Image (cartoon, rainbow over all chains, first blue to last red):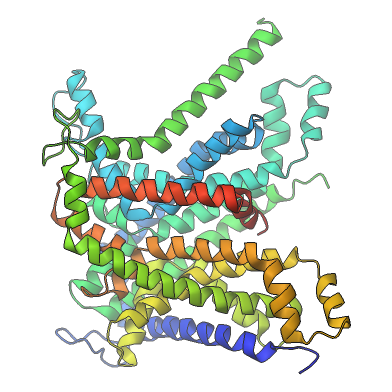
Length: 283
Length: 273
């Protein structure tokens, strides 16, 4: 005991937490293999029927939509986030830099509900964008932005942006500036320096950011629920509806398990596809 | 051929305009919600014709928001404090010792980072039903502890890595018991890491929504859940007023964290992984 003081005291609470969480995940797995008894909260016997139901067009469609929304959001967030991360790393003035940092980081702590609600006010039929367009006479009647995949993706990009920027900025800040200076001194223009030096060297950050953006979007619930309004459904919305509208907890659990498997596969593929890019290293 | 200096200036301007557009996109919702909060009319309209503070008064007086706020404080206080103790002790053990199942326990505790919150919420809901626990605060707190623990663990682990162990060795060689070394040397030196880890956990727990929606009941619903239910049922600007207060409160906390703890530290946490 004198060699490793407090070992047992310090690890027991953590082990209990791990046990509790493992039990919760095991409960999901166990429910995913149980039959649904309509009208009862208790599940029936063990069956694989839930997993067979996943292939029904209705559910397969939601899976497909979810992956498309996550992929589009991840790529759009990357495109919007890269210039911001680049500016955050390269701006020299301290005041400008910390202002930008606060603007980027604050939304991260605001929570999904407040930010989604704000987007409802921006995108709604008598919301901000439509009021401007109508008063300028650019459109005759309000544009339908709410309850569309476009609206959902715009809000999701906004929700995911801070994480993406932080991860890209972490990657960019680790690049030695001397490489860019060397390229410049050899006569490369700014665009060429960026495309041949900075961009390839920032690839690890790009891969990490895109992966995280995908996983975050997959986990989003309030944004597709409120802005999609039932017309744009992601797996998270289906899980909630099944659980709290029809009390079909076994199938909700099946969707969770299948969703986890799907994310694992997609992220695994992304890592494999990115492997050649990550080999680009100078040291 | 455009001269090089003109070309570079042009690029600089394109960069600046792009940056301004992106920052505008980031700020837009907060700006719009602020304007909407001061609109006197009960329906949304831009620009507002008349202005008033009445939605702020209404949001503050609304029972569900008040209960949600106090429930949130209860859940946040318990879960972030428990997560701090559990996380700090375990981070210490990971940093210093080798013990059986070390990486397994660590792996399980960090996994909520990649598992969607709706799955975590459903898991705790089913587990609570299976062990016959009612949907009280205990389940909500347990769920939040698990969700914020990865952040606490990482933040304290980074502080431990930066800790100079020679102070502890010096104290021990002078005859201090392990307990005395821990309380008089290690914990005081770790204090900034402990405070930022706790603050981080508290902010995340207070704002947690998706898992809370699954594990809370009418009696235990936290503020984000109460706000979500309000948005689904009503369209008046009370919610906008509450959002403005929320944004102002969070910005103040961030400003506090920046000046006292260094926002860079929060980013360093992200950098190390």
